[in-house]
Length: 274
Image (cartoon, rainbow, N blue to C red; front, side, top):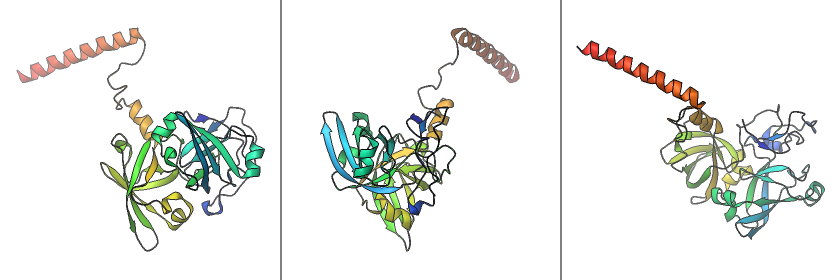
């Protein structure tokens, strides 16, 4: 799986008290390379300090004492499910309890980060370590689209939230499957053609942005990457479907064999009909 290159093995898998994970200290740097992957278990509810637009990009500054405590220049931190890179010296970030990241045009288009304002809460998560417990599911930090909170139905101890679903993502969302909403790994309760529902437990309501977002609020969505890879491998994505694979000689040989098989099958069918 092509996880985004960054500093994974140098981040401790420490988590907030409500996450059920215990810090195990810094890991040794891996000889085989370093990669980034998240799990959708929010560590900290941070706060937007500033968002400065710079043409077709922006510079975002976020307060998050926990996630900056071991930050380094180039470290990855997920903000509302978007993987961003710390651009200042790690010691400065740790001392201030804040970090700065550049946000490119593609990210502004595909996510809700462009609509953030100073003071807004944001979900923060550091990358996990290879070998650590996978509390949620594999999250790349590459947002696929933006949905909208449609309705909230409170129960005695939890809430059911319905979120709109872009049409091009609907096929990846199934009942009891995984989806990432604003960086939170959630289980789909019911998947419809243009929306889905999730149930939020008290911890999620208290420690993440979904406890505060009302109908009409935009949320970042990342579907399960395994579903996308499966679709592509089966040639169902409209890009590779029907396209022959292999060298030119292999394609020609395969085409010839396919023609012979179809001809033989046609002759067999004709004989049966007579």
